[in-house]
Image (cartoon, rainbow, N blue to C red; front, side, top):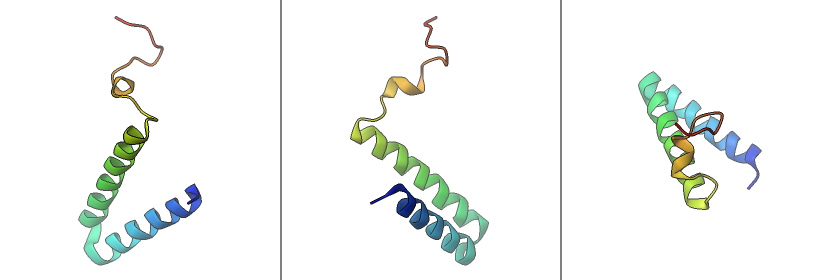
Length: 61
C-alpha cells in the first residue's frame, strides 16, 4: 500500500473522529495513530530505542 493511500485513510479516520466525536475524539485518534506509527516503525526495524535518546549532533556527553 502506498504512503499516499495510508495518509488518505488516516486523514479520513481523523475527519470522521472529529466530525462525529468532537475535538477530544480527534485528538485521541491522532495520538493513538502516532503511537501506532512509532510502534510499527520500531517493529519493522526502522527505529531503535537509542534514536529517542541521542543528541542531535551525535556527540556523547
